[in-house]
Length: 423
Picture 1 (cartoon, rainbow, N blue to C red):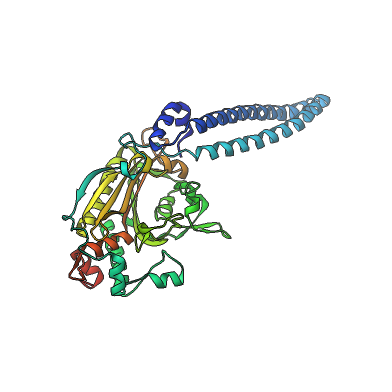
Picture 2: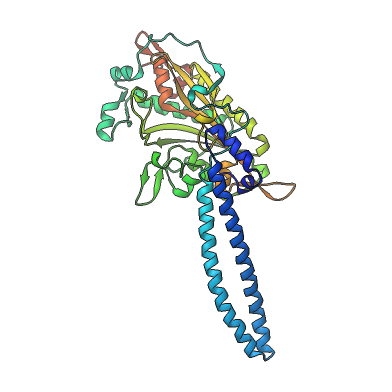
């Protein structure tokens, strides 16, 4: 959430910056300014009445002691009126504060100055490539055909058990999944991340703090009776560990990682782009989350990008990094790099990771701060997160790019984790 101070001091800048996200903030900014003005006026009136009430309370005691009973009784009558006025103003202030907050959460994060303008993924910019040379299109089977022939992923039984988008992994397919999870976790721990095993459901406060609510309300599975949400990513519980905390500067950076299943309704998704593992309602992912000093967050972002690139190199996949344009960025992000791997069987690039810097947007919602050693005052930290990695499209890309004469040959880095070298 953008800070009220930023909006008050730089309203034109906020409007200008958000146009890069194709968000017209002029009307909502006007409403925020007007609501905040009324809120401050109401707060001032409330403070004045409360001060008068405090003064009268002291005077009443003095008047009674000095024998001025009549004057004391007049003051008591005045306090009754004041109490009613104070209660009414307090109610008005609460309503104005809620209205102001409801308006503030509509505004997306301001994009970093390096974010390119654009409206869709077609306007993203490729900034880096890696991995082996891409195989020619059509040389291998798409993963949904290979997995059906080998029986390692059962999409039909998943439909019977739950519905489309909930595959069942069998035998070597299940071992491949668990091996990849352990491989990603070990690589993260070796890179200095502390492993966390978080809950798979969160409350509304947690979903709000990282920006899923209200922006993605309809995309999350909601257990209505308990008002809990199935997590769309481990980012939500991992980051919320530090909600309402003030860290010492020497505790930064915080680097944590966690494996979780992830649950997304993916409402409105259909067509060939959702076939097989391309888009699921439940999938496995290893997430990395960082909390840093504001001066060091973009260096940390590069460190995280390099970490993901290293994983893809060890998996021997052809990859590229794209910088997202303003129109393709998430509501909460200030700068996002997407990793895509090439699938020769599908002749397309598959997104497998997003690595983002949210600057203070999440920490303002989280009330996550660190104490500045010079001023001794709390400052908002910067938060970052990335997929390292999401499994479905990684599995698809591995199968589709590492087939040789009808056999899927696993990258050497996975042999120790799966116990087999091929399928």
